[in-house]
Length: 217
Image (tube, rainbow, N blue to C red; front, side, top):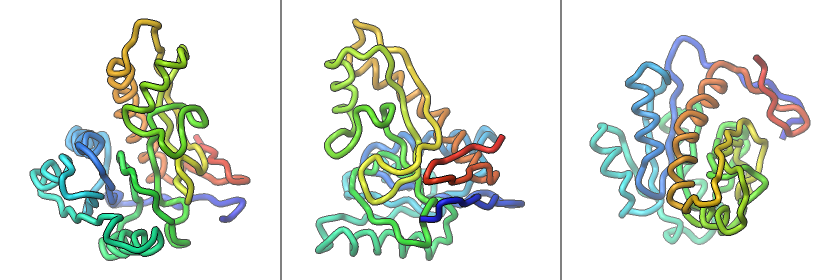
């Protein structure tokens, strides 16, 4: 990775997103709702699901989006699995790959460095890494008794929940909150943070300095 890099803006056209899903597609739905409201200037030429029973597949198809299923089990290793994903992303000429509840580890090729984002439902580096995903994160938050949780958008690299942090949003956690209540509050924060970071990317306002993401206002 380059130590110092300013990401170029996407000008005079919508940002082309690939959206990778493993579940219900709620983040995809949020992107499409923001687009419909005029709050996110995007196209989604490609959705990739990690399994054929993802609820998000029906949502993608209902929106008229191309959706491909690529299962990890169909490949011998992570490299081949990742190559299949990024070959489709190249064919679709996407500007940015967004991981939207995508649970499989991928290896990012050089031409997609700093062009793959992930959102994690906690404040990295807390409650993250292998095994911390979905509801398990919120269960751990409640069990630990922390007073603040939230979400993190970061550039993905070849480790779980790693790579430069771009943005974070916090939510309070009450002592009486259940994991479901924490999850609902965190998701509301995600619905605002992820589109905000995508807009920053499109505007060329993210700079990488010493492997840290710096926002240029």
